[in-house]
Image (cartoon, protein in one colour):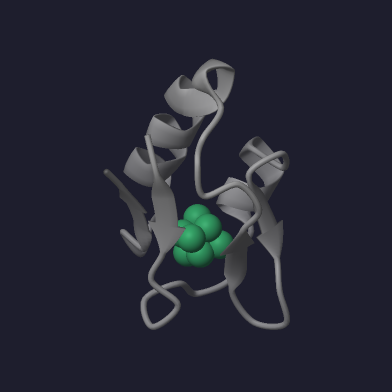
Length: 61
Ligand code: SF4
């Protein structure tokens, strides 16, 4: 599973970086992806973060 963040949509709310800090970290204004190839043990958490993102900026594929 891969994940990316649409920097044009991200508001920098910090929800994903708080919930899955192993995959997301806060940049200057928007969140960044640390691991574009999501480790299997974090897939569920990343999917939930994508569902919870208020800006729908987290794209999993
Ligand atoms: S939850 Fe969504 S809007 Fe908030 S920092 Fe993460 S990607 Fe950005």
